[in-house]
Amino acid sequence: MTETTGSTATPESGNPEGADGAAETTPAEGEALSRRDRKRANRSGDKKSGKRAKMGLFARIGLFYRQIIAELRKVVWPTRSELTNYTAVVVSFVVVVMAFVAGLDYGFSKLSLFIFG
Image 1 (cartoon, one colour):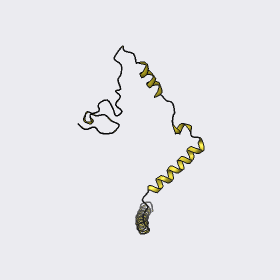
Image 2 (spheres, one colour):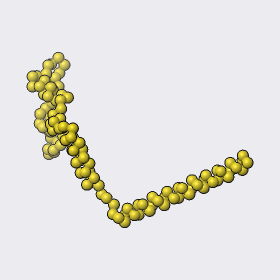
Image 3 (cartoon, rainbow, N blue to C red):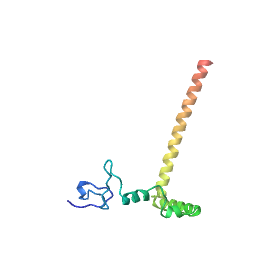
């Protein structure tokens, strides 16, 4: 078996205890947690830690806008000819749908005039 890296432990990976090698055991019924396990459980509570908890309002806003700009740089923008083609397709489709709706409107108005006089 070869050991693979990752966050999940599978029998195929050769690391059944977990990616970090520490076995996560739960106490059997009637057994109490050890002092180390209780400390570990308290540390992984709902406390905020790291950079995100220490950043102020303006720093978070600045980070938000930097992330927006980074995502916009990843976008594949169309070329000028592609943009012209896409625009022509959209405008022609809108004109066709407008003509269809105008024809239905004209037909229904003539039908209602014929029925109700």
